[in-house]
Image 1 (tube, rainbow, N blue to C red):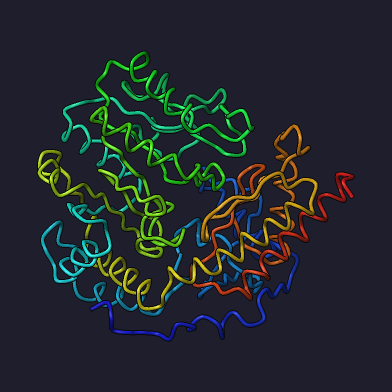
Image 2 (image 1 turned 180 degrees about the vertical axis):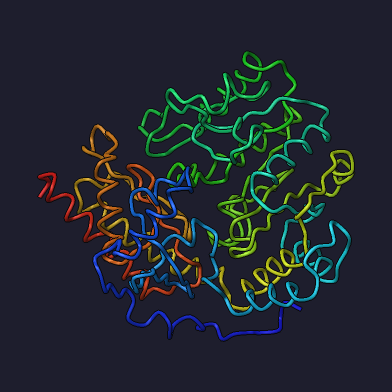
Length: 462
């Protein structure tokens, strides 16, 4: 039922013409009033909203429009979510069809679920095909943790500094928990959860004699940590393939193949959390495909339903029986609307040749960012694959001191120019919709570069 509408590949371009179109100073007067009214009751907003409290009322393709009529170029995809464009006609129609026909039947089989299972089995690596569905990323991660314990009969987990896996206790125990004097996550992380450093090519802990990052040193440290820091009962290494929240940080190309070997050696599962990076954002269905590595467990989300809340947890076929032991189903996971959104999204990626577009335009992004690195004194590093991108701002290229103040100002200035995007402290994060072409990619990068130049002048670098 997801193929009721098959739009032309350029369905979004007519709407995008003339973007950005800024009618008022942003945030505009209506946005300010609505935001003030809403925040009388709504608390706990994200940093990006606090820095730029705009009120959106419409999105289509690669644009967002606020209540004041200002039209923005979207470089965030609703924080990595609406990756195939806002309100994609095929996906919207698929959701609408099932919203009118059958909204929930717990975890019973439905025709659209059967089609989704077949489609997923076709795009995932061979034998990675035991699947369960959820309604948010954290739920999928928690299920993956339970599955890892059931598969291995072990209870310990190792994750990496600056990874992000969710906000419930198991998931957040795999991530940074420090919140200053606010102890919202309790006195300690959950028992049996440990953190280790992972390779960041720009900020390496260990280097070779030529100054390049030494991946082997990280693997040797993991070997030592397994012996000295755990009780020898490690179920899984839990990692993002590329760190999104931390600022689009990709490891060296040899890292995951070597980590896979380490896991195999010690009979530890490799759990690949692709909630943010998966489903095409880096030009592959799985980001781990770039390195030819097959995980034992993988989770998907965000882009999976193009904005509709649907996520997935997948284990290898040989471990599928473990899902029968962990009470894997959920109230909303796999409902017909969610399955329709996911199935339509996967079909769109194939029909519109999205992966190739991401690779092609991604090459443009990287070339443009490398030029910016050469010409801007506060651009210390650029990073990314496909449409998962980051620009790291520093006060000095030799000391690499993070430049958080500049990051906030660049974010706000570019937003006022008409670019809706994501802040991350001193690392500027870009995650445009995967349908974007080079024309609008250039337009967005122009706004970012203009904002960087203005900030450099304010701080006396020019």
